[in-house]
Image (cartoon, rainbow, N blue to C red; front, side, top):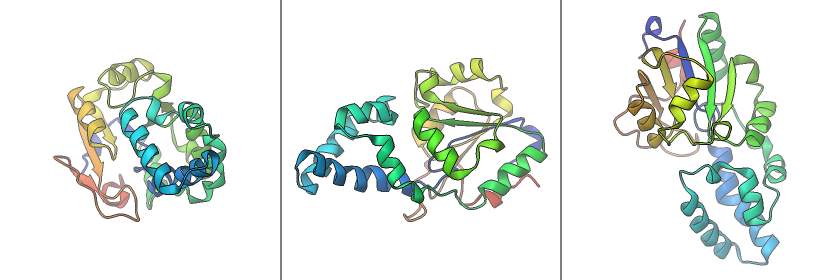
Length: 217
């Protein structure tokens, strides 16, 4: 699936790519509505409806990914709530051997995530993956989400890479399309970001189920 002789840099998404998206889905769809209902004296059904509307209004923006924004907006300590269910943070199968193989092959390995820096720090502490990367980069540091075309030249200015010789793996179709428009040479989607859900629509992109499918060795 990947001609590794043509790849120098590997850009990897975090949630839904390296980590099971079940944590995020459970947190935002189940746990936050329950705690929001408690905090504001609402029924859970009403809390879910209100939060679904709020989420939709911010989709695709940096605010959607910002724990500071949602802490203010919902009057909840989002980072503290994430710590309460951090036992659900799980590395997807095959990720660690894949990252180790990339290092053995001398590839430049960069984590590029829309997750807020506080979420990134928590997930790296829980997963133990940080040592495998040359750089961990949150889109909040660049002021644009990965869906924004402006993210990609800002990323290249921050960490030089040759787009044509770069592999990028992500579970978001809007993000993959933005990367393709900016010339990233090799793109892969993820078929099942949340391992407890069915395969998702991967659109026009090639996709992987398991990192064994593209193991460099």
